Length: 237
Image 1 (cartoon, helix red, strand yellow):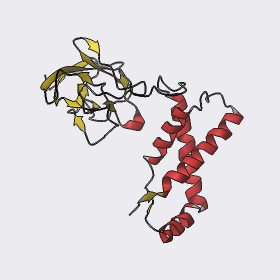
Image 2 (cartoon, rainbow, N blue to C red; image 1 turned 90 degrees about the vertical axis):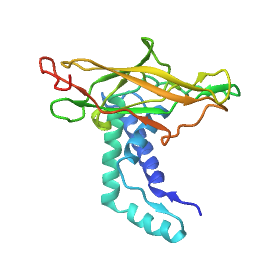
Image 3 (cartoon, rainbow, N blue to C red; image 1 turned 90 degrees about the horizontal axis):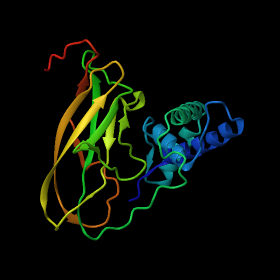
Image 4 (cartoon, rainbow, N blue to C red; image 1 turned 60 degrees about the vertical axis):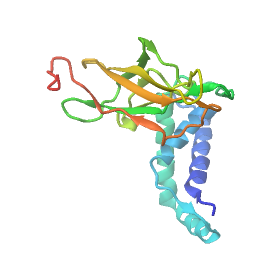
């Protein structure tokens, strides 16, 4: 059985069309339409619309009729334009790269790390905190990420509800099946807030194999971390 999300096709088509139209108009806020920026915008839209899965020709026909309705098209176009604006406003450092470096296969034993993800909250309101800088460090140095599309330091944004994610580059191991715990620190700062540091221990087992594709199910969720405005006492201390 083949399950297909028709929404992917229409979102990719609409977003790419709007990118081309906006590029031709060249408004002041528009600065890039590279493949990475386009994929960021497409991902933004797909994460905000319900999927339309089909397994048969009948399903394709029905969904095609629904997706062709004027209001559906208008909503998708509005969301796509919003995505293009956001991606051009908050571009990641790799946005103008022609292509990310292709990872080289690894046959030696390595430690593959899970995705490290967490959320930064305002300690008074318990709402997601936007504009915070999150650094993942080991021995006082920034940890290297898997590739240029993963930032360290990372930023928290309104669109991601104060969440940050790190995907670490694998570490070399002496042998397969080696158990080891790695100690990291997460340092968080934001304008007008007191900075905070969180100690993190990540146990992993070495394995043989190439660099893994991103697997969001292999992840480590860090407890929610709170920042308090300058001059406000932290009741957790």
